[in-house]
Image: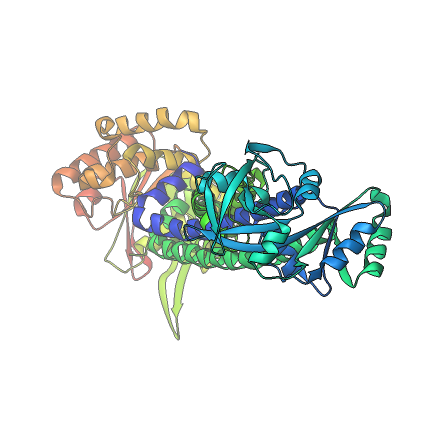
Length: 387
Length: 225
């Protein structure tokens, strides 16, 4: 017999209470882990989208804030406020290649899908796209569509299929090879056609800009600002501000989860207090057999520590299960519809697993201090005479 | 008497509950010889159990002193007192007081653990002690599967876990039928024959008659010895 074995036998003797107390800490830790790993996967998703954007600078209407910047990464509709005159001015600046994009939405089979109006030739070389099936646009005024890899798979489209955008029947000319980013879930139209269908005149939503010399990025930003009355942001800045929003949301969610862990801690205190009353006589026996106050304290502290370790482990398992099965549905409308076969990679982070179990154990041990102190303080005669 | 294992001097114990003070012991001086079989008898509520608690270091006297093998118990702090209980004293109580969730063997093992035996030696030692009280076959039974007499025998095995200098028993047969009582008494006499010091607090005249020495406690004082 060792102290740990004695404690384990004590805990498992009262199965009902054991299970319910454990459920409290399990649920607390599970929600904590769920929020943590969902936040983590959201961040890695945003990083990925940003990388697949392929631009160093983004030009948006002046006064655009983080919301618009997030939209560029997630394919939401942006106000189209940049005129073709501005587009030409920016494209005239030496040392940059700039492509205009009009972001809109359509629906196929009642599911939303992003539509991008693009400068077909410039965009292809800008992004380095390759054609998987069929063919790419042959000219700017073609009335056809090219679709991303995942969109084609999702809606069973192939070269030669027909889609309807704003009541207009369009032929799918080709399907892009997989890019691993936002483009996979997008329908591309030549810019003039998109502007006509969505009645945006000669305006576009944003411009993606690549610079030849990264060291002079600041000077390019200055030149664009002087040539047009538009806002310019570097991809790094954009990423930073988007991630800071996500970070704030994450911290808020994690704090909510921490409160539920705290509530579970009071559950442990309650269980342990009840145990000190119920087992008064048992404490007395142990004291008569030679247990010191320190030993009694250790027994009770170990007992609540066990709740923390076991609850932490089951909570992590439950939390990871929830985030793997439910997270794609939860985050779909918020920021990104998860591209098939990607986006789940960052979920099981060993730091999250170990950190959560340590956190739960620490909380449980702190919760156990007061009951353990109460138990250790009992006088042997008082405890043994208790009926 | 130079052979005394226990010496008490002017032992007083009073409890105060609110304004009323209860005097459980009012000056008890006695000596208990090593290897003796002693009964402490007397009516309920006259201080027998209190005396046993003080001798066993479960409680502290209000006045007076207890010496166990020359050690003044009042000079020990709580932790040293617990260690002394673990090393030198074996308790047996009226209501057996086994740990309910554990088997007979595990109950003895817990006592061995608390008196410092390493885990490897515990099982062998526990089985040996259970054999001594005739319960080898019940080693894996929980207290709820044992009769009163069997539970008390487990309690005796547990009290022997530390090979104590003295066995202190509070009404060990108070909850047993006569057959079980006879079994328990036989074990106690065997232990005495093997050299253990046994002190029994009891109402039971039959036990008292077989004791080497009887100490009567009445109104917190020794009335005969």
